[in-house]
Length: 331
Ligand code: ADP
Ligand code: MG
Image (cartoon, rainbow, N blue to C red; front, side, top):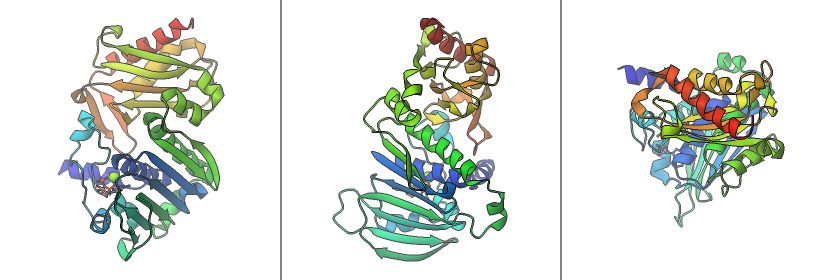
């Protein structure tokens, strides 16, 4: 069946950042207030995601690594309608564990017991024992692709792999200012949000004071927008003078999901027009709300690229929302 094929294809772990994404989504799905991501060597040696979410008992830890197990909604409807749960395929831990060594240490919130540690290597459970674990869940992924040399060879430099990891964790940190998200690479803390701030505070933690102070609020809904499927466009965009040579600081979300869409990027760039030099890109954290049926999520599930039935209107709506924010600041 088509959905199944898509799900399987989308689930392939391409690089460390793909595994990080799945683990962070699981932590957020588990209602965590803090998510700490630690990676070594760009994530190729170690990925560790520790959360204080609802945790798992022994049976749940065993079930978590089984094929096709999910405690969540199945099908793609949740993505289309934008419901809260992020995971929807029940394949991530199983798939990651088939190409690495995964150790899960988990204890249900409020459970007085010790907790459970499970080791899953190359697709086999090699150990389960009661172990002292904090409340919540810690998942460690070691030696990613150790048993798939071709895939391992395909990986880029540590710096490049870490850049992908950084982008993924940044996206989730910005979208969840009420969760304390931290990222540490090779022993160095790259950023840490407090989980108690708003979007501005999260931008400050992630990108620093200089960028945060250059941010301009965007807030357009209903009649503020030209006709089109978008119900609202909100977030922060940078003063045109605060820019970079790469589009990686364009963080865009549709119904709360970190996705990219050509129409959205073109709308943003159109609003800045000639104010940005050639090949320069602003810092953007922009949230779009749209009825699920207007979005096509199946363009490239893994890359989280979407299209809209009416791309032209979306482009105009985003352009107008960002342009009026810039205009209000005399730009
Ligand atoms: P999915 O997220 O699509 O359900 P996964 O393979 O990512 O599939 O996870 C399988 C199951 O393991 C989840 O449905 C969830 O019940 C459990 N799980 C995974 N990670 C966590 C976590 N950090 N905290 C609590 N439960 C988790
Ligand atoms: Mg998941």
